[in-house]
Length: 400
Image 1 (cartoon, rainbow, N blue to C red):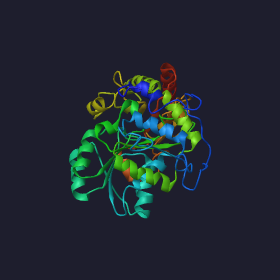
Image 2: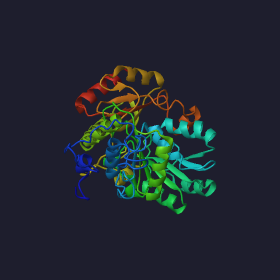
Image 3: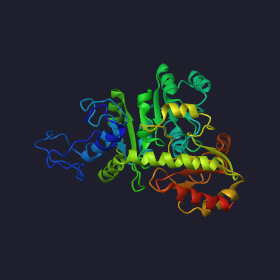
Image 4: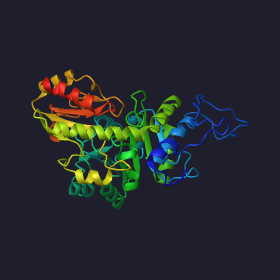
């Protein structure tokens, strides 16, 4: 495959080759936990499946290609891509790049599980010092660097659930200037819409459960890096900690990204139409979607996000309904195509209430400061017929 192949082609062929033994176009699922050795320490490059698994390598090489690591197989066996049992396992392993007492500068709005791990687990067990800042405010970011001297920066863009968009190239430049590791959670975009490594970030994290898998039938996580020295450290940590992705899950994720490009096109098209409809509805207070001109960082989103052949702003929409918790409950209880469930990024549309569900562990005062109110509802727009989804939303709004 040509190095400059289109991203849709890379979704199918990137990092892949047909099986040398059978010609199989999809990697076999290697379930063996161990491998025979010809003599003590003499083997074919495989010893134990926690350390080496060809099915996992297939998925890791594919996501490394999509995120444009630029790392060769000689530098790292999976080109700087690493697959884990869950997204949180990937995040937890990434935090092991830090030492006891290090400060991490994190986006103030982020997935509740990431906040829980940083502040309620690693602050106690690792002595980690998380500092939260609005990374759309670059003066605040610079002040935080000067005051706290963080060793790592953790940014989501767009954020979960208020969909703030941060200029990743600027964040990466600030991190470089201060010798910090810059990490981007790219779950909401997938590498089809946004490739943070190309913008200067050092490490990318994905919950592979979401758009990469794409069918709500697998749980997994990914780390990807363009820095060979970081790849070497993550390779060691992946093996030492052991929270690796199993071969069946790796197969499902690899299968999922084959259709990632097509799915993202549909997610974006429908989400844009739904966001515009909601913004005009008299029972909606406010809509947050990066594709709307009303979004505070719309220009930044248009610069760093997009489908390969035109605009694309993802499948996630945040809606503030008029009213409070009662109105939100009635809306959520009366939609039917949108399943009331946690998670996102699948072929089916999902809807949830972050303050009660995904972000319940974030302190109430922090939620209030971020605007995660009882009127906030988060939509993950699937790939169903868009007119059917709009009709379903109208049923929910009519019940308020």
